[in-house]
Length: 218
Image 1: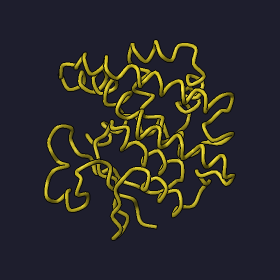
Image 2: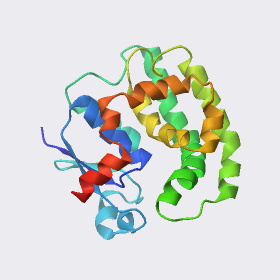
Image 3: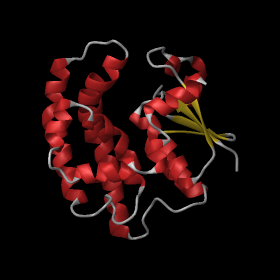
Image 4: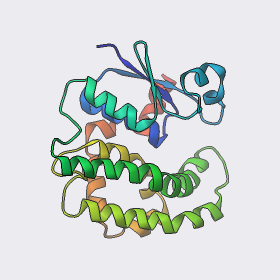
């Protein structure tokens, strides 16, 4: 089957989602890297693929698709390898619940509010917005508490096996764990064990910001 072309910025938690899924499925892919802050996602060429100018967008042969949830579900369905969607309806519902929590609550608080200011901006010599960090903290704490409750004593969000939920959430929490606010929120949290399990996976190790940057530079 032809390779998946993934358009987006290395380091973006949203671009990392389809990368992780491709790695888990053994699906051939190529990252069409877009440099941060260059406006590459607003060019006429890119807007022809995604009129909203957001990342990621994928191409699979003549099929173009945007929106991360649609993308990861598509990759899971069309490629061989272990299914990343539980067969049990309740487990699948938990997976869907976590993915929506990530999109609606984790992204604007943990990622845009804390991770972007504490991790991304310093990498590019930009000054963090301390007010944005402070405003993000209450919702970030709510996200952590909600996901702790869903994870409970399970190894992964939907049960015993990795699902799209774990791959969807990990990049956001990797950033959070690199911040002082995150270290405080996650102290003693069962999410730390989940993060450690995820960090040990080959898919995670092959899609780090540093490794992607090396590949792009080469």
